[in-house]
Image (tube, rainbow, N blue to C red):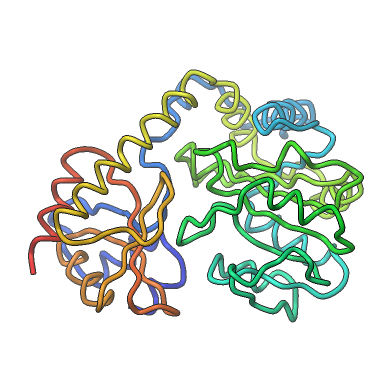
Length: 324
């Protein structure tokens, strides 16, 4: 199970390890929206031309409007993973990262020290890195709390809002400016269901944004990422519909889990975290039914499940949970 606890999305490895090529696998390991933004087929791509700088500016303007901030404070990157690791070379001084959370948070700044969420006070004399909502437990630190931490900080606050698109009221993206030591990361692929586009954003003071741009160089994104991201962020109707739909589907997943004796110990509209005596056994039982979930090497009792795409997938999960 250890190879599947590193991160989600190892579907090919799961098929090779567990077999069951006779049925379509259900991948619940990532927390990515199973309903991808549907407008890709309507977009025209010029694959012969280099990506246009004006298209990059249009994308960042569309994203900034969605986040509620000024485009001058937004830099598009080919996935937040890259942006986070670049930031580790930019910020000075010691760092701490909330734990548990993304593995990258502990790797981006050499020597970063893990601190439990419950022990964070905002007064730490170090760059503080946390996710909001947190992954994998969905813990939310209220925006008012984060903004309170910023008032007297001498060091940076880095907030990874990869899952915030479903609950925009928790975001501090609108508060990024040159006077605050605040940096926010936003992910495109999770909410829009298009992780393969590899698109994310760094939001911060213009001096930090300039350093990211210098490291990225010319043409940081493919033409497809520019076109897809711009159109998707401007699709207000789909965004509003999807936010409502995801909450409803999460409630349907809760009902199935409750029927099989599981109560989430952590939650976000895009995933549920359950606790069980032997998560490894449950992981393998679900895999035997061609359902991939996410275990964690640091907690043998946790298993995270993303949203099933439809009623048929939910019913398959229901039957697999009942089998055993």
